[in-house]
Length: 289
Image 1 (cartoon, rainbow, N blue to C red):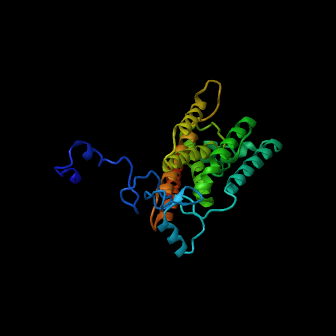
Image 2: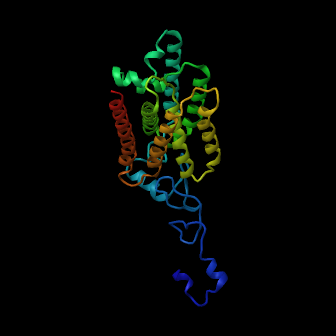
C-alpha cells in the first residue's frame, strides 16, 4: 500500500503494483511462476537449474555441493537413484506372490484376511498386515496393482524409496485400522486398497506442490471411492477412506517440510498416523472383548 501513496501514481500505474506472480528472490522485479523444488523460493529462468524433479536455485545447488550432497535430490530431500520404481516392483511382487499362494494353498486366505472377531478374540494381529497383501479375485488384484504401478511410480520418484515405502505401509495400516473399527465383527475384508488410496492422497499433495491440474486425479479418485456403493459389489469403503486420509496427511508433511528438521517432520508424520491407527485398534479391541 505504501507504494501507492505517491501523488504522481494515479490510477493505471498504481494498479500495476499488484503483481499476480511472486518476484524471483535473486532478481527483484522479475515475476516468475517457477519455484525451487528444495527451498520452494521463486526463481526466474536465469536462476533455475535442472534437477531430477523440477528445478533448483543456485544456492541450494551450492549448499548440496558443500555438504557433499551434489547428487540430485528428490522433492523431499532423498537422494535420487537410477531405478525409481524398485520399491513399487517389490510391492507388486509381494502382492502377486501372496495371490499365487492363496490360489494354490486351500484355506490360506482365511488365515490372512482382516476379520475383526479373529483379531480381537483370538489375538490374530497379523491380519491387520497380511490383509493388505491378500487378494483372491483376479479383477481385484489387477485393479489394485495397476493403480500401484501408475500412481506409485511418480510418487516413488518424488519421495524417495524409504519415504515412499513408509507412506505405503502406514497408509495401508491406517486403512486396516479404520476397517477394523467400522466393519461388522463377523465380516472379512482384504486387499491393498487402503495402501493404494494412501498413494492417491499423497499424489494429490504432489500435484498441488508442483502446481499441476488436480482434476484428473480427483476424477479418478471419485470414481474409485464410488465403486463400493455400486449395486452388486462387495467392496468395503472403510479402508479406502482410512488410507486416503493417512496418505494425504503424510504426503503433505513430506512434501511441505523444510529446514534442518525436515526429515524429522517427514517421518514424524508417519509415526503420528501410525500411533492414531494403534489407538483405533486398541479401542476397537476393547469394544469387542
